[in-house]
Length: 92
Image 1 (tube, rainbow, N blue to C red):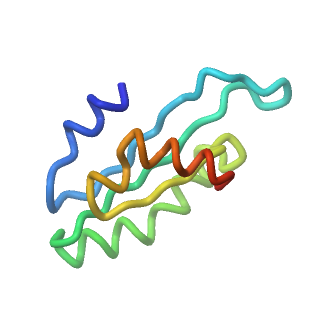
Image 2 (cartoon, rainbow, N blue to C red):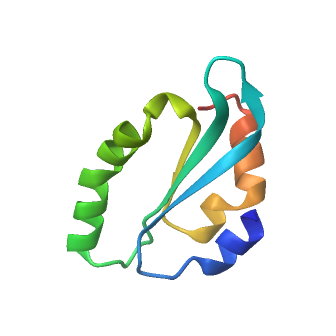
Image 3 (cartoon, one colour):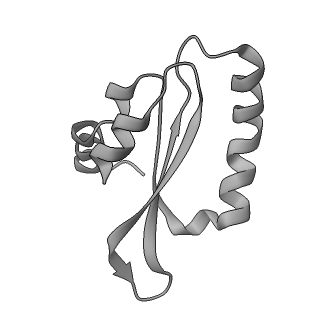
């Protein structure tokens, strides 16, 4: 489904994507990946609103459930290969 998300990224329109991981934690259940796409060239007002609401969104949904958090300004920064590198580097 990562490829489907990647194909839906629209230039100049910020998006948030949430993915559930297959591995479950005994305490919290399934972990999630929080992806935020804020492309260069998107209107300043949209970027500012997105930035100000991003952390609130994670907090409301339960920040402890998000085991990975990636942000990017281009689709390539949020590709499957970029996510695999992120995980391999031990980043959260």
